[in-house]
Length: 304
Ligand SMILES: Nc1ncnc2c1ncn2[C@@H]1O[C@H](COP(=O)(O)OP(=O)(O)O)[C@@H](O)[C@H]1O
Ligand SMILES: [Mg+2]
Image (cartoon, rainbow, N blue to C red):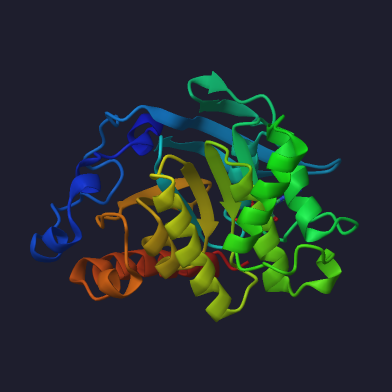
């Protein structure tokens, strides 16, 4: 597949209503990259084009990404999904500016990414809180990376977001005094409180219990909705339902690149119970599940 083909799929389904999607069969191949590939008419907030990256040590070099291409429109929520080790976290670190590609382009607003920036905040897979700072200070620290606002304003914002993630009354606790789920809530509060244009999230709910996960998914949807879905989000997960609930598009990674682009034709605000009952949802779920399964087959066949 040529790099350009993988970058975009038509945005037509973005405006389709969920109930239309139930009754109207999706045009064949509309969910597949390449088959109807055109450039998006929405300007790309993030563009990754023809990226290759290898991890090297003294004795060997392991190719992780090759010809990786995709774009994310402003205000779009895109999930990266794929088997463990396929390069999702690596891709996110490129967008965060924590790692540079060996070749290819990573652009934000048309400008090459050369490092971290005030336009991006990141939620890492494993909390990444400062253990010597109280919850409140962890969030304030994040805000200060991107804002020169007065101390009182920063404190108020930190308190607001900690409350929104359900940590009112826990602001003065240190990370080790919080459960894993609570620590992750602090990390999420910190990223949200930074109010950056771009939010990069690496399996943010991967380590929390099932109930907390549902609560945090709903909270994220609610906050994005309140902020008029202005934020652009790239979200790594291997949970199919999570990807379908949160995303406008799901990018399936395999063989060091995006192998499929799946449009999720449900309008915001999405309600998990409503969308899960639709035929389209079940079809998309199966389509992604089958891709995982194929992946697994390849993996087993390779004899590793
Ligand atoms: N710092 C590193 N040095 C060497 N290999 C790495 C490093 N980070 C990741 N890898 C390897 O690169 C591949 C992709 O990793 P990663 O991006 O973390 O995948 P994912 O997030 O999809 O599970 C894996 O094979 C992993 O072992
Ligand atoms: Mg990862």
